[in-house]
Image 1 (cartoon, rainbow, N blue to C red):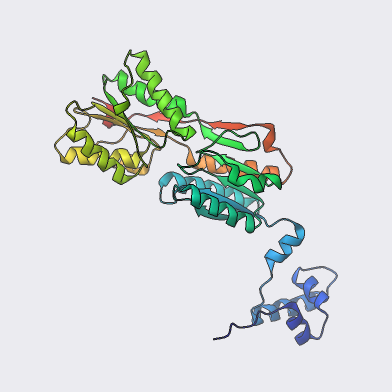
Image 2: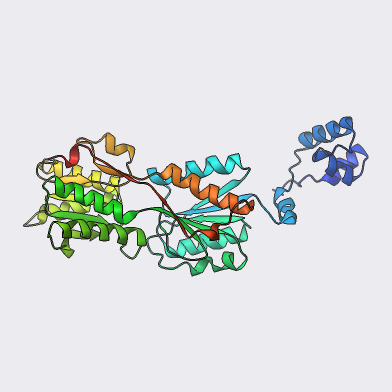
Length: 340
């Protein structure tokens, strides 16, 4: 079936017996066009199903009022909070978001960046995939001076602003809390240690252990894609250990919760047999029994900060290159899972 012809300003002009220029000005509510004429133009445009080619108009202005967002995963509480914060600021400032996910794949992240570039986004907000070790695939944006802000999972780059928390401090505080409560053999579930965020949490974990004269055991640092399935896998591995850990610090709440549940199903008591601290302060952490101690990670504030910084740069209110990083505050929330 042939596609129905798109209505143009020339179709409206022909039916009203006026010029296309008059139609264009009328649609834009130009005061030089008589009010009654403007009303007729709008009514006929609506009747015929006319759609303004906003993309072409924006290209002529060299601005599309769209911001590209690339995240590792859409199905997480933290990501939904970040996107909500971004959406709030973008809407207030008259911008739209184009959102895509890399699914933790560098190749998909590259494909996403190419799509964003072809879509002529005004700027880019990116949380890097677990496989990403450099950001050279974003060079086409940087060469055209299209601003990029990295958030959450960042890589230090003088051309990009990075927004994150102090991951070293967060890893240190989570581990130090467990040590203070008497736990000594602490297993850490981490994401890819090549990622700056996770490597910093591991450093914080090791620093806390060193202050208690405990040598970090490589066997107690487990690297996973942090998911519910990974939590179950780690629990099954713990149950097979001859000398089990007495605590777990996980870099993700969902992973920690499913690890806890699997161990409890096997007969272990939380926190008497094994204590837990997670990361992100997911709503599930307040529902699971016992409630999960966790690091509160301000996702909504991070989304607002990233969008605000980018839009202020686009509007020439500020320059993201005047500062290389913004560190947001995180907080350890102590609940029953770590109180032996």
